[in-house]
Image (cartoon, rainbow, N blue to C red; front, side, top):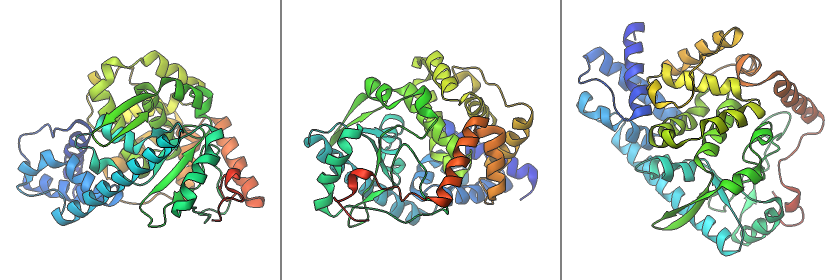
Length: 364
């Protein structure tokens, strides 16, 4: 694909994904072909069903579905099945007198997206008081749930905010129990008690979901995007932020967001996120805060990030490239040092990520 054609195709694709409208009345054949290529990459990185939903406004311009309809249908059916299973798990927690707050996917799907179902991907992330982790485990163990104990890295599991996934016997439900909304340093600016104090209730036709307030949703997305180093794993959270700003940006307390981000050492990633949105076609007028593209070494890293998003992640990054993103943009020096110290310790004493409350209750 020629560079100019790819650039135009990327602009159309991302503008549609982030705003819901392509911003053009027609596409020339080369750009249309480019959009199809990039849409296939997005479907591979995200999901066919959600990609088809996000890019549906482009179908009239392409005279054909953007994503293979059979793949999109299968993916959406899986999302609906996952959503139903998540709501059953939440209902069990509520009926047992526990106090779950749903982070990310399921909650953001219903607050920010219409239709909601295609956005429901992967885990059910649930924030619970530490004292309720044991009772929650007791609730699901008789149903066949077990913790996934396989270490995927040489240093083991290093998160201090959550544990390895808790899987149902059929593999459909995958619960991530959280004791903080996200890993350190987010709790410096947004502690679990803050999230609980500001939580809101969404009433759905088939259940109730308690989720963080909008300012906290944005900060949790930001922490996840930073942890993902602005790589393809961050796509769903970046889209969530764009939809949050589009729907509820005018009502956000931006001063609170900036103050909490500063305490959590996330000011530089916040600037990078807003600049990324604008670079991908999101309207600056819809962003309550100032858009300040990164400077210095961070500016070079940020430009590489923009290139990756325009190409819709055509290649995977090396470990060295990801570390460089951490050092120059995603993490403050103290955060970078702390995470890598955890990794070094994990090489000697790797953690399996299973909560202590599970010992004696369940085997991996």
